[in-house]
Length: 110
Image (tube, rainbow, N blue to C red; front, side, top):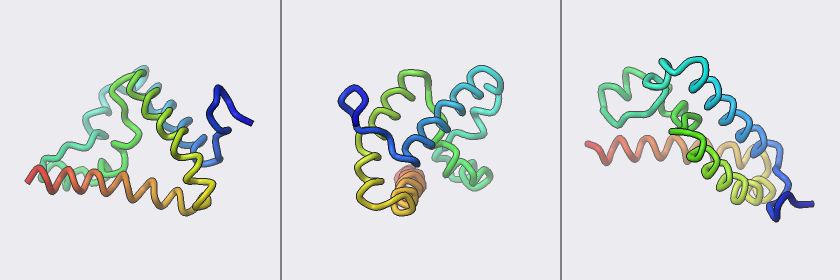
């Protein structure tokens, strides 16, 4: 069964969509002062003083439309990958891609 032509979300894709939406809601409505400490900045000193940003930036979005289009892409591609690789394989892939993107950005910025 599909929703608007997209496949039904798999468990981890659905959890990631909810987590991203909740983080956007919390950061915009309740805790906007936390955003600078959660966003990855490719300044070497900052990145290593705040190492959690290698993961936290994956859940911080610039606004509603940024979130919508990122979650649409996650839904479109993530569902099929989670079905192919299983939940654990997809989770590892998602984390490695996120941390790898931050590490690559850090290396390129040097």
